[in-house]
Length: 204
Ligand code: VGL
Ligand code: ZN
Image (cartoon, rainbow, N blue to C red; front, side, top):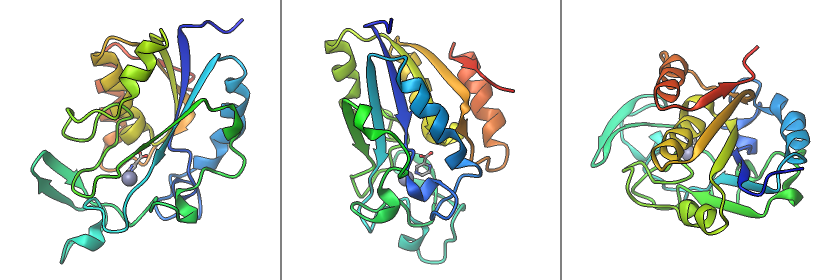
């Protein structure tokens, strides 16, 4: 029986993060069947959706002389610049067509403020502007989370760290995540999550 205090949070399983997409994560589509199957084990299923305006400040195209995967200094710290991706309403922002979105009780969109990126499902990249997810979970009495999705080293990592910091018990199913892995970012993310008390499960 699914426990009432547990939720599955599916991070950014969107076309642009899958092969053929603008910011494709290697093997990003491989996790979809396993995520669909895991949904049956949870009473609460939440999806996140990266959802940027076309002129979002995280896009390299908005910074003269900058290329994707270079970094800039933003008021809130260092920001990686990305190819244009997950533009609001565009096909790339849609969920992978095979993802079972009908099971979702909440879809939380993030990254919609032009000036600030939002990797985490809980806070924008200033680590203080809330998305509202914490309040939703607490008012439903949910305090244990399992995270899956894309990408392990960015949105899953930031979401897991914020959830742990907020006092949730957090498990990341690594077999149902895939990474971008920029300059060791996957190893750094795994180390940070482990240090924060996040349970890492399902690594082959
Ligand atoms: C993501 C980079 C930019 C993610 C989102 O979902 O991990 N990464 N936007
Ligand atoms: Zn994004």
